[in-house]
Amino acid sequence: MGIVNFKYGLASQGVPLYGSGQDISGSTYFVDNNSGSDSNDGLTWESAFKTLAYATTISNLDIARGSDRWARRNTIYYCADTETADLVAFPNKCDVIGVGSYDANTKPGITGNHVPVNAGNYGTRFINIWFKAPADASPIVTLASTSSGIQFIGCTFSATATTTHAIQATASPFLKVIGCRFEGATVTAAISILAGESGGTEILNNYFTDGAAVGILLNASTTSSWGSFIAHNIIKSATLTINDASGLYHVVDNDLISLATVTGYETPAEALVCNAALASRNHLTAANVNFDYPISDTTT
Image (cartoon, rainbow, N blue to C red; front, side, top):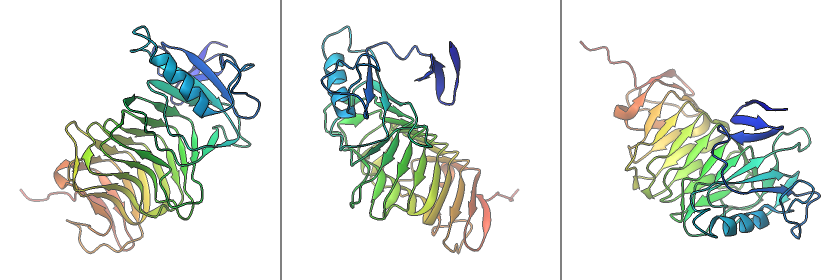
């Protein structure tokens, strides 16, 4: 079949990859939640593991086994209808790539609250995965300072009525959320960046569809030693689309829809809070007005 185009990279022999394939330099594992078994070796679809958690354990052991693996990236191909699991570790230096067909959906589902606590968890990339929330008052994904460089690419996050956040990150720098879809009105915010180092974060080209209380929320004590960006998103929110209390993020080219009534163009605090000096070309539609922010400076 050869190499063909794929929205977030390429596909080789019908299996999507991220990037040119040069990223994938380590070991490859397969997970089929319907027909696999964690007593298999996980090295082919015919001998696939059953659970993503077990594949994560094996991949992490492989990455840690010696200097010939320390700078490699592993790959886990993941096929499921909807697996129910709370991940307490992410696969270090690994791409988790969703493949197959889950009913009418082209990405596998996993339902749970995922709180990776493995120390030195670097650079996990989740690609084409559907993260579903259980019926509890928790985030779907909670990241702490033990994690750095976590990426979600082309994923879907589905909240229930009690889900607090889709993603909550505390002092977890180099987070990338790219081309994802956020569904369901999360109670606090779809994405919250809490206190601590968040440098290098990029929230790009995402859809926030169901009017969360806040779309993207940044704590006043958030720091960013390296440039961070919220750009090219479509965000629908009941109140604030973006609330950057830190004033440190670049907010560029976003289409913002708020159900709130805005009382000022210069500081539309009911619908958008960010540092105007780091903002450009954002279009805001509120309950009563629509305009570009920052507004054009007409002085001469």
